[in-house]
Length: 253
Image 1 (cartoon, rainbow, N blue to C red):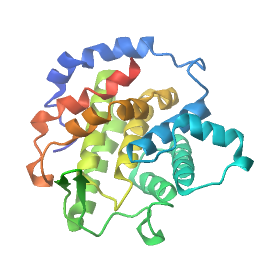
Image 2: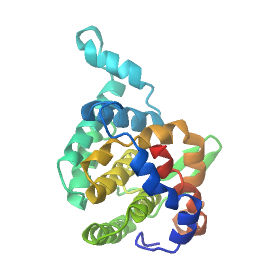
Image 3: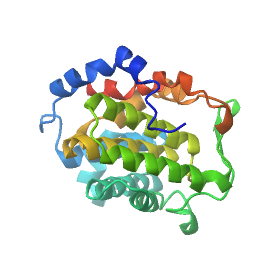
């Protein structure tokens, strides 16, 4: 699967894509929704929550206002590291080097130093309540798959595409990244960051304000159900991917 593939674009347009221009026009990019810095913190909190972090947005913002009265724990550190990674992304171009640096920043509490900002050299799977849900590509093929992914990302960044296609390709980037699962830990956080990063490269800095991470968290069951397209990397059925692609535009509603 190459993320430049438009195979599913027609059905995507029919299901939700044709609404995207209207949704963008109606989306409130003003500070009525919150200041840029606050929305960045919100994105990091919700993305962390998806991965099991128990600190909700209200608790984190109260910690921010009263740091001297709180004991900083691992979960707070996880969120602050991810906020820093978002900040780095907001000031730098989307490319492989910068994504690896973001991973190095936000994985400080997740991984030992030698694993941060580097692709995994271990076989990894995704486990659910009933056991193994998905087996990722073997470690010896991770660099090859990520090289292909970033070649496609570079191509998409370099060409003119319409807003509908931006959201379509952003979701495909998210999906393919999650399926490659290139890191020992932090893949979900990186996939959601990369998705939004791509959108802002194409449509502008204001799109860091969209609440995709919050929407994914509030619709987490659907998020996980639709990201699951097969039991392993070689049995992925992208003919079923539109269910996942449909989720992102809903965060504009």
